[in-house]
Image (cartoon, rainbow, N blue to C red; front, side):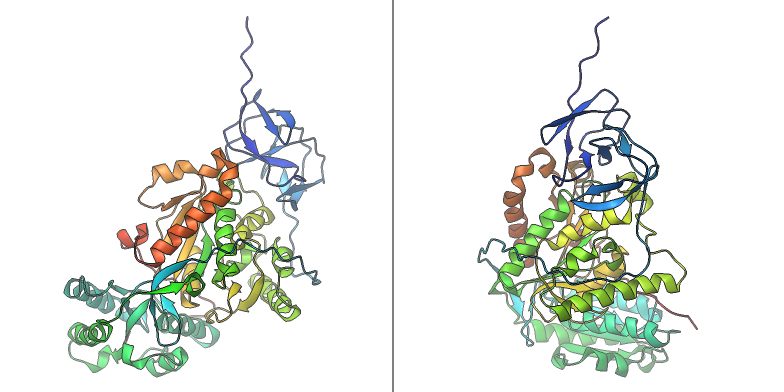
Length: 502
């Protein structure tokens, strides 16, 4: 009887010191992989995106991926064995003490590029010229949405669109919880993609109109209209009349050529898989490096998905004060978990685990690839406006809706959202979905805008695809290309809820 031929399968090792490789193809017993000149026989079935041991490891041994520890083994594994939740455990605990050990700066390619945007009075530049309808309280969601629908038909072709952003908050909130809602909505009111803003209130809510307007600060009042619906006879008619005035004010707005440095990019991942940290996230990170190298701004958030990788970011801080701000943000977020009786490592999600991610360290080390090698120049608390060019770390949870909305409220005018499992979510700013694998890009072309899974077939294409993605980002910023979330009219916000409800 003739033995079945040995199948050569694909796997990739991220860093030369790693103990594991990631299966590009599903692996079966008897398959052989070659990684870094070493050949390993596969001992058991291993799904694509999951980890295979490159050498024998014992109980208690630390496993490395990305060149960093991602957990400790609870059972021995032979070379060619599967490493996942059944035999790998996190090492993360509570708050930690850190020391500043600055890393050497890495200069990214400086390619001077331009795009076409809307210059605003405060010096910022919008990627769209839209009217945003923002409500102080969830009670008037329906009115805001009805006004937006009516106005979109009325002003089609005159401006880029009219959009209402429903939320359930603004009443029965106190203290910091109410402050979160107010700061987030104030950030949206200031946003440069909104050439005009209608603020719709009820009148009796905790989030009073005067306090919200005060939180918005120095905004161009000629581009804002506001009223409480309890004070008018027909709120929809009054809203459309207010939009008539705003659109008239916006009628002469035109795109102008601006440098790439005028762009504020928010980088986010959601529905990650075992390839996210190998393809989509580092690709988006290369774009981040290119933008910050020419004076642009990039936001990175999801603080719980920095746990286990925080030292990498801390040591990229531009100065010791910035380093201390990073430490403060990370430890205060861990304290937030502990305050609610939750472990800091309650992550990855079931979908992440199905895609090959095992521990929070592994997920975090892959997630921070979205920040590239850029210097961390500032740390922002939730709702704070970004003001310093470079890589800014923003306080927000891992939840896709909350963290993406937070980046927009802090000034992001385009989002790059990487995903391996797929998600249709979109946000107020154009949201570019970057697939970590080509299968999800083929399966969901109406969700995915850019396929980074091509890197699995050609790892040497990283720099070429980074240039391609940057060009795509600038085309989206210029209005030459619409993202799928815009075509599908998927634009949502989510606000961080922390505190009691009356």
